[in-house]
Length: 223
Image (cartoon, rainbow, N blue to C red; front, top):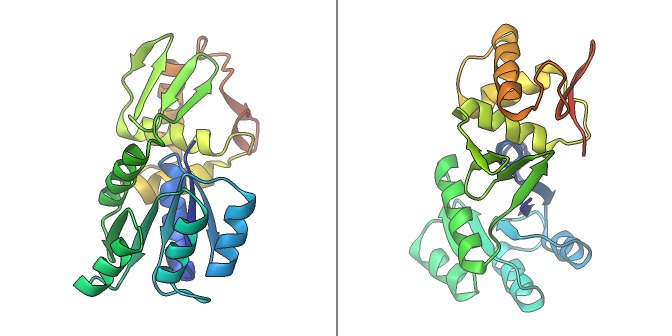
């Protein structure tokens, strides 16, 4: 799965953007300043950096320059500074894209995919049993045949994929679907969606091997 480092010190933006990207199938880590970003990248491999210009420590332009000097990683600026000078400065320092705030979430995903495609970091594939999910193309296949999932079914599957090995309560799943899809989903309809998803991805939906029920607690997908 695609790993993203979010260099941002606004806690609300970090919380909302991390949750959104998680549910789109991305793994997100966050640091608030330049030194922490460089330390993280020295220890961990990531596919892309989302970088704010205004940071708690250091600044985005200096951080971008340092990242490009030491690591071969795509950088996208996310900033309220959308003036021409800031944009040109960002690109001159090697930034791969520059997105002014506020931005539309779907546009951000499109821009991320474009940058990853240009950098060659594409084709992120996840396997769950005999189900293969290509998070770059946004498709799921079972036994090499495409599964035709609704938007909510696909988002639900991505949420499980991103939280493999973690027990998820029904409330956690409901919050994730509500926040991202913008559709009304209550406890009863969640049961219906999980049933429908199981019918498409499980060999025997009555005895699921991928999405497991933890009685009285919630659901879990094994790593």
